[in-house]
Amino acid sequence: MMLSDLERLLEETPAEAMVDGYREAIVDENVLGKATAASRQRAFRCLRKLYALEQDDDAFRALRFLWNGNISSRPLLALLAVLRRDPLLLATSCCRRLRDLEGGRSRSARETDSFR
Image (tube, rainbow, N blue to C red; front, side, top):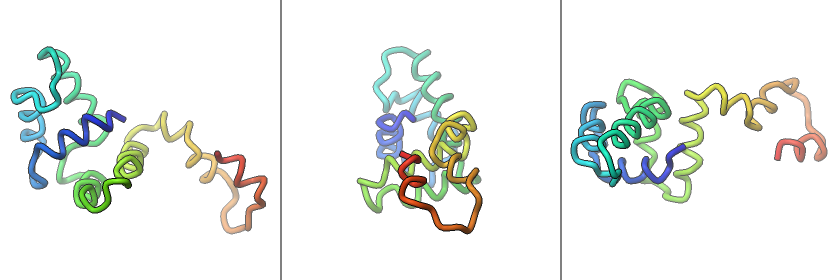
């Protein structure tokens, strides 16, 4: 999820930044402290793929809005944003198992324990 890179990027850029601002911060200003230009470009591409980094993207806008509210919730916020954009991660997560169960009925402790 590149959580430490995301944390650093969001610390170093204004909340209203557009995708070009994030690219500039990562590639030109090297706010993530990457060793080479290629690694900075790769980091930008990966973060863009995972989080969109666009104000027009509802999930990213919500992530950015909630980011400073509760520091301990940041990993969960990042995971939720990535699950929306990464079908492989979603397919292998407990969220998939929850979605596949029949809706509306009570679950036994044994069923819910299997999600862990």
